[in-house]
Image (cartoon, rainbow over all chains, first blue to last red; front, side, top):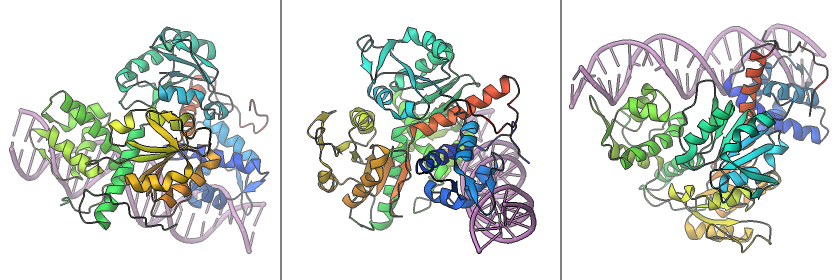
Length: 230
Length: 230
DNA sequence: GATTGTGAAAGCGTTCACAGCC
DNA sequence: GGCTGTGAACGCTTTCACAATC
């Protein structure tokens, strides 16, 4: 079944493929030829059945009794994720986070070179971050067209995020990665993903508080006893 | 049922509570007294049934025919998330990302003041970021004890992340927010959450590629041959 | 003997739809 | 009349377990 045509891959699987890919690339770096679902699962922090089910959505690329051929699986996962070519991105907002993202080599290294960064603040325009010069908001459209940018990154303060998204959409971007703590409203055809750093901390806080409520007595004091289970 | 003792709240709900909280705080800022599940849902980008089900896990704090009282709901969500007091955090790694996180006011503003930041690089030790002086790795334990830090942030390169996590655990933190693209191995009692920026982009890439395959000519024949760019 | 690929079962999360309450 | 709280239905995800295959 599910050969290689337009079948949809479950969201949960899509979210894990990048993790498998990173591990496969590391394995290839160490000249591993084959990998079993169990090995891959251990390295990815999931279980083997999940790996097999996930990979089965791409096609039947394993060999029973042997495992998966690393380079071939890399090729297939890349193809599935659309990573056979680079995806240049533009960043809106050259504050702390925008600068960090632009300066962080990880984006480019993993196929998402920063084609440009813009900011509304004239005092930032013209400064250079990681080899990229900060441009004006008005240059966004030209940047997107010139570099065929499909993905935009919103790294503005919350108050400016919706306008940043509007500008990105107007410029022709079709996917947005949003770091601002707001729910963006965009046309339905536009893909949006959100990364909210404070939300992640608040989820951890929930578990910490829960731990405190169970072990300690009352709510308030978060007495960090060092239960070094290491 | 489900009063306010040790009932577990579903993970999916815990992940949304911070979003509701942010919206409730905005509503309170605008002096809203009450909010309906539908209004809250619209602002959060989810549907009303989900809001009601989510909030029902905290207790029965709504009034039929009226909605939820904003300040009271804020109090309850905060309490549930353990946000009745601050959670100081320490950051390991003062590179691009660590600096951005330390300099970004959003953490402190939302209850997670940065109690310290450390780096292995002696040339960074002593520099100041957002009012915080970068310390040595060896100071981590003292920082954690002095400020009762429960949450650590790993903002190192991938190769250093596991060691950073080990140090955080040894220092006494019980939750870790990991920005490095590696799967951390920690004792089972330690909570870990991961934010991988490249993974988010790769998920967007999947959808972009999918879009291209649909709108463009039909897909490539199942040719396992060749392989365009790197 | 080892390991994949996959039906079937179990577990979660979402949505529906409406009784219950203000 | 309006809106919450929730059982029931549905759909998605994970896990199990084993036949198929190398």
